[in-house]
Length: 222
Ligand code: 5RP
Image (cartoon, rainbow, N blue to C red; front, side, top):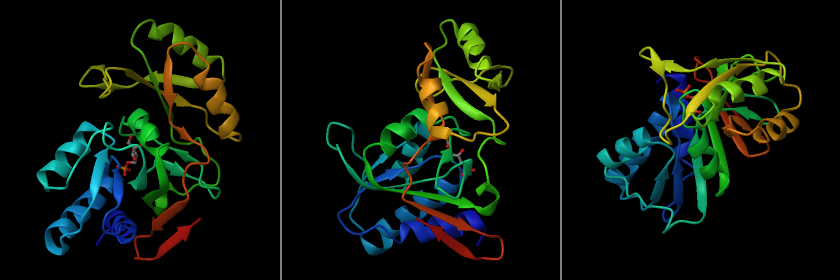
């Protein structure tokens, strides 16, 4: 079993019958959704889930995991999601997979927010991974200018030679800050810029971080 799968399966063991569950996005969250699907099938686990992306929604539906919408769910007992970087105080960079806005909406309605990752994601200081910032397409070049003034180099995310479009119809500017020493302050400054929809800093959200190493060692941080 690889490290991502190991972390994912340790997190899915926290899910109990009757829970409302948020499903993350990405290659680590993929293993969590697979395992939830297996528990639904083999154990008859009863859960109601909501997904952080179209991709995860499709995967969950294909595994017959019961899904619901926001009109039915206002609170989630647990969400299991990946991260691009996590530090010792459980501050995160997310959005490498482009789902940061939906991921943050779901993180903010979750009681127990659990992050799963392999040990390459555990860092001393956030910022080596370019911080994803979701922006509206209208006037994005000016939003780019404002972001640059915060001391980063932004790059418009592309896919097959065109601007990458999120599930919400927006663009992503990946911002190279090199080192982010005050994620809370930076999050506030970013989200005040007109045109910014949301940034990939998840500050004081995660309660549990499960990190798996290639040799199978699991470390849990709270
Ligand atoms: C998607 C995310 C993912 O959780 C993050 O990119 C980690 O992905 P992976 O598990 O594939 O490394 O934030 O928007």
